[in-house]
Length: 330
Image (cartoon, rainbow, N blue to C red; front, top):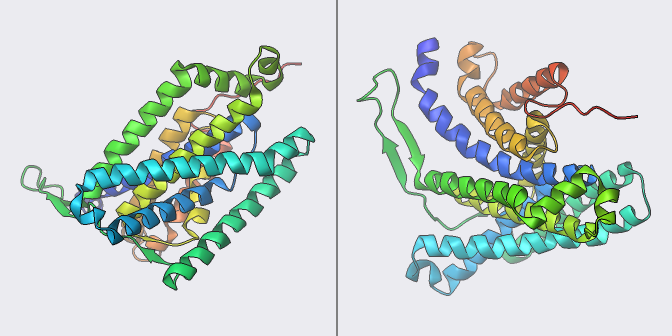
């Protein structure tokens, strides 16, 4: 049993990193909004889903006018990512202005904002489903092929204890682009004026406003950045996995929120690491649960495995793996 687990371990790591990077970037959107507003924006998972459909729509349009065959794949990808990030970023700002800001001005209870975010989530799902069925007759979309070449890394010849690794060329794209996005976000939050303003608002909104920081603008920028990253990640998901539907945002959003909590909600670097860790745990469970339990549990129990790990972490370290306990001063 142990030998079989070790043999497929490199493949599990590759697949786990691919999924974990998706979780990490989506989790950042949750943790950014929570850090400033202490709001769990459950609509964020469906912003990610909308981004994947916008990316697919742009790809289909470029294919219809011949750009997909005449332009290099990398240029096509950059155009699709840029358009999707801008559209979903503006959509995030619109959601904040229409749904959350009026509640904030009225000092509505956080529970009301939470329920509102769930309502927005359902609205986005049904709007996307309506347009997808209107255009294609089916809400399940298979995206045009892009970076789908199969690649094999023969590490078995060097290290016989491991099997060969098989992956799509899109894995390399997902890996590089996600690393760039995470590093860029870290620099933005920690080394720019707006990033400093975001951290100030997250620490004390009232004091920040007294120091001439436009709190509403900072919150809008936070929603724009988080939603743009979520939408761009939707494009990466669409390119990597090929098939999308209006409901992928719900379960993936829940898992990304879990990753944010696992890493330490409100901690951006914690959300990054929590997402990667959750992806690795999930893929390890999907690949090995049947072997470990001698067939009693299959890959479909991978979610149970991941959430059990989360529960154990929160029991023994409620602030998350990389969060810090907050001491309330009286």
